Length: 381
Image (cartoon, rainbow, N blue to C red):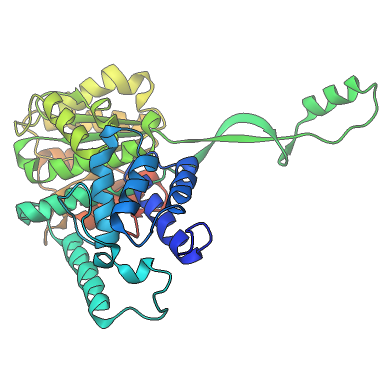
């Protein structure tokens, strides 16, 4: 048996599994990946149990990582979730042609090819379905896919300058270096602007009319938070404004959802968007949280309070924020028009008006939010 460190086919599969774990939020960094490959070099890589324990002991930081690790392992190597904490049986039961070095090269068997095509087709159908029409099994699958959403925040240039190998000529540093050398000419020194991710603020409506979509939107907020913990803020809005940032910083989606659910006191209640937005701007936004940020408001626009107040606060938000995105799940319905008083008052101050009604729409929303390539890891699609 060849070691995975010397077999490029096995190494590629193993590193793909490591990347999948990273997308799921596990701390599978380069050092852990190298330890994983070294461990596999002493084991039988065609045995699922050996591979499972090698990854579990090297790629997980603690007990909190185990549920996500088990789910990723089962899906990556078997194509479907399993309930067994340790995959039973030999590796021949789980994609043996991808693993065994002695497996003949060439196209996969017709049965396996059909199974892969069927799985991809099922995901494509699920991506297009309205979240309000999903059955419990489909909702669980959407939750699982959103937990694997990889969001890489695009960097923006700031006005702060830093020494660099190339860029603008740094006259001050160049002159100081020349003086230190007694006036002898030295190499020219340069500087360039630093980069940092743009802050993202999400305001998610958890009122009764948004109940079919609120859970998926909060899971999307968790994925965005996981992509950049320090520059993401999330609030729920309804009859009360609730800051959920701390709850959503948990790496694991289900634990984060449980913490967020416990923190929200007005789930499936009414809607006072204007008053809640004013409270956000008074307490957080005006003081800096919304300044230059990309702000996402996810709501159907049903306002039980004063729609004029909502319009005024949206105008105020638009002046502070870099960009305002409004996600309304009803926008995808045929013949939709923004007739709700709150939506009509807010729309003139919105830069992008999107739907967010399905898994595919949420992926597009995540792309708009991060400004970078966003999607579910290839091992999971």
